Amino acid sequence: MTAPLVVVAHGSRDPRSAATIRAQVAEIGALPSFLDLSEPLLTDVLRGLREQGHPEAVVVPLLLGRAYHARVDLPAVVRAVPGLRVSVADVLGVDPVLEEVALDRLAETGADSADPELGVVLAAVGSSREPANEAVKELARRWDKRFPMSVAPAFASATKPDVPAAIAKLRARGARRFAVASWFLAPGLLPDRIASLAREAAPGVLLADPLAPDSRVGELILCRYASAPAAAA
Image 1 (cartoon, rainbow, N blue to C red):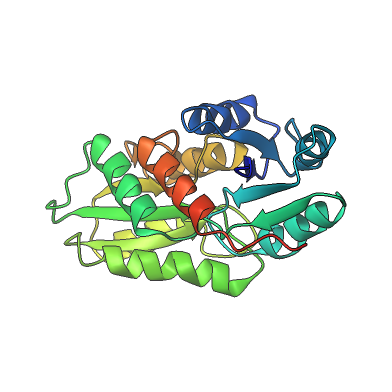
Image 2 (cartoon, rainbow, N blue to C red):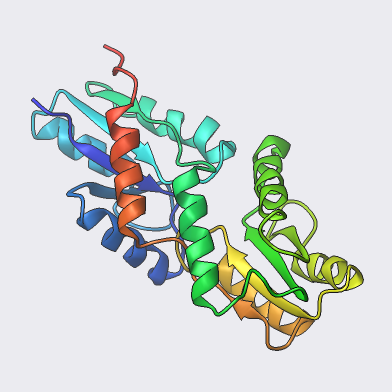
């Protein structure tokens, strides 16, 4: 029997977020679930599979970093459903596939990578765990090679710099036009906060859409499913 694929996202009070996740996973035949704030919860999906007689399942976390939700929340939820062997795949993380999608979203705004006065902000959620933030900062450093002016990371919560500080840094380097690249999978309250702060700091700023839905994200989910470790007995 092929183990069901369950995709889990964090969840949001903003209904657009869950709708985006559902649209993303529908095209690959996966079951959507959430850790909090949106339905169905992962616990309920796993219990449903157990009650249907499935012996195992594979959970793919739609998380862009290995922070608290991946390290603590998700394992706790899996442990709360005994009687079902659950294999947890790796997070999506800073994957080259997502990097390509993010750059395409940025290009769709009209941002010109050859513009010598364009400063780019790479906006992400932020974490209390520095390795997760450092992964975003390293991505911004790689992007520096693509844009003549500069790329600066910014975070919506938990750490600095925030968007106004990132734009100020780019402006001090000589940027006169600005674009914000999205390191978010779906729309929601935090991306909206990023957009609002960016517009205040730089009127006319170009704002990229989140990464999902995109067929390449679906393909990456399937890759994570295929490479998931064997479920514990």
